[in-house]
Length: 167
Image 1 (cartoon, one colour):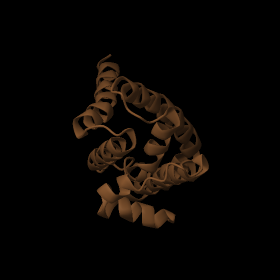
Image 2 (cartoon, rainbow, N blue to C red):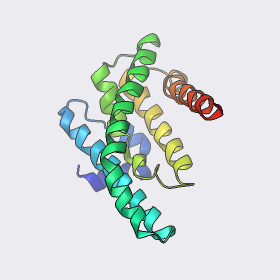
Image 3 (cartoon, one colour):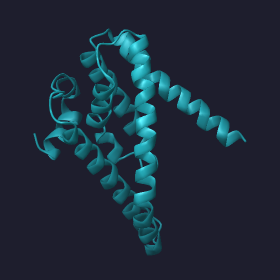
Image 4 (cartoon, rainbow, N blue to C red):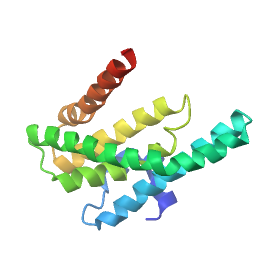
């Protein structure tokens, strides 16, 4: 399946999208999909900032930030996926760490939109939904366990960010 078919499938048929995750595909298949989504999303953010704020220098600033923000987000993804894996292990999931990372990368199509103001909320909810559906299939556990597995790290992350902003 090509890039645009995967994006379309994740929007139009998320349950089928979750059931057809090709876990036996090489890791770089998933990594390419994630990196394309991440950097295309950051490029969209740079364009959005420049166009809607009518300041072209924001575009060039956005381009220069792509590498920094992209690298930080990739490191964050590894940490976040580690937490997802630990929770799936506690919940007696059947997948491995590599499977968790593949799932996160595979469900990354909403990352295209999380950089745009006011769009990031539904995009994040959509990503959580895709992750829940895919975790349920790959780890072979109930929907409730999948929800607990995926939503808990997001709640913890929200509490950490809230605490940092309150300082």
